[in-house]
Image: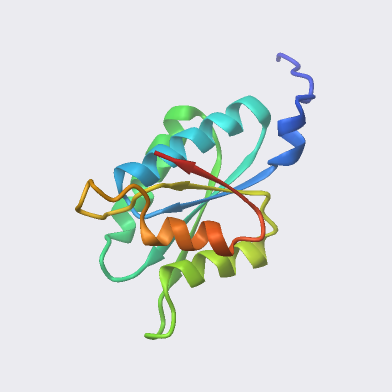
Length: 140
């Protein structure tokens, strides 16, 4: 058995717990890949959050997350939150998880399932960035 010393990088202390909102889009999966790299290099704990807005296949998205985590050799936690009524939004569920979970960083794709490629940053990412009490890393 090989002994690895605990990472001493400053970043390993700043971003111990990372939340990655996943909607199955290329942008969100790219954000997941970056977070998995953080976990491998710095020992971060990753939680993937899938918000079921009835427009995504939660099982399919969750399986893709598990597959990428296995391939990277990283343990990952997957949480699924449901929208219960019309007053709730994907952003409110992400922020609810941030407040409840004690995360240090949100890694989020700049655009989700938006069709238009002319949009530089999507409304969900922008709302999370503006309203989040913790650091956000936007992946393009």
